[in-house]
Image 1 (cartoon, one colour):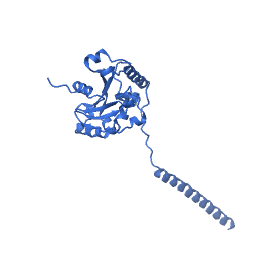
Image 2 (image 1 turned 180 degrees about the vertical axis):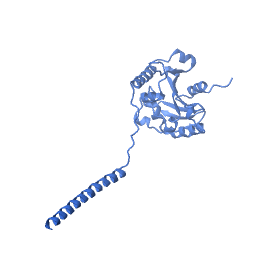
Image 3 (image 1 turned 120 degrees about the vertical axis):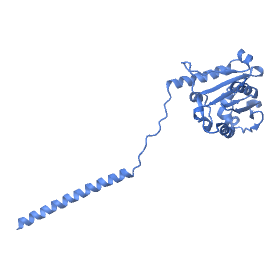
Length: 241
């Protein structure tokens, strides 16, 4: 009888231990599942494309080209035609993308407008002025595949918002020969309506220049000279015969 009781007690003890072990394992597993369920899933962050070797060559090419143009005298072609384009092409003869041009010149384009620009439809020009001086201009063309609604009226609004920083954002292409101080770049521009939307710009040494811009159905033209802007309008908005 004692042996039977002993076996029963031992058996009961073993069952209790097994039950406890099962409960502990189950509870631990449930806790892990709960923790996993509460842990938010982390999506892979967007990885921007790394700068390719071609981009580095493009950036260097743009910088060299602008430096050479700014240090060279006005060409005879510019004198004859009143304007000259500045070509930006890669080693294969293809147009350097606006993204690389922007990196090379460190220009900044207001975000709403940049969204609708064509990465290959841009051009930089200069027009001869008095004393072998050059007046520069830049054209940014729309990517027509992205055009939605009234892009023209939208651009007018964006350009108005851009006016307060246009000098600091574009000085490297509109005034590549001028070394502005930070205070001069931050000068407050008072844009006015005229033949074009324009503002006077105070240059180092007290000289006065200007920024003039025009919004067309094809894109945006910005220049430091209204007469040079007229030349570009003839190019991008030719009159019907």
